[in-house]
Length: 244
Image (cartoon, rainbow, N blue to C red; front, top):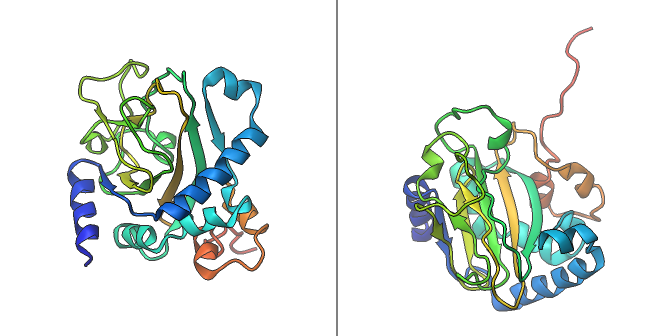
């Protein structure tokens, strides 16, 4: 086993997350950031101005660089070893917090928020964060609660205040965070002069319903590679009527 994969597995088990520095090369990260900045400008609304953050979805259909990152072989290998060779992608989007963003909202990701606690033991889903910018204390880097993936329930109230047991995930652009889908995390205030962007990809076992309609995105991709077909659910079981 790759020593980095073993380290990721160990830190996921104990902390619930692991930061791998500089996993993606600078040229790819710069391209992804440039494309995302264009999309942010094209898709901005009054709501994004009011909230100080903006989500961009359907990335598979918006530029090949996002397909390349979703299918990054090291990332996929990590989750295949932890979740099985037939994993699929539940959601794939970008998130940006702009200067002046102030809100904090501790939460867990899908599919955990869709299931009543206590949650079963064991990893059901893996969240992945691609840093397109440096994550710093000042610019709204992700906040996490180490070990929270073991609690088997959502964060307690109040969820809109910083926690004493919280930790700020910092890192350089091109770093990737691997996280247990049950981790407690939040975006933090951006008190810098620049936006902070990342890509978010959730990998799940193939018997879970994905959060997004990934099949619809796949249908709009011309000549998709085999791995992309798998991740977007081309081989996933579809419900059918049994018998007469």
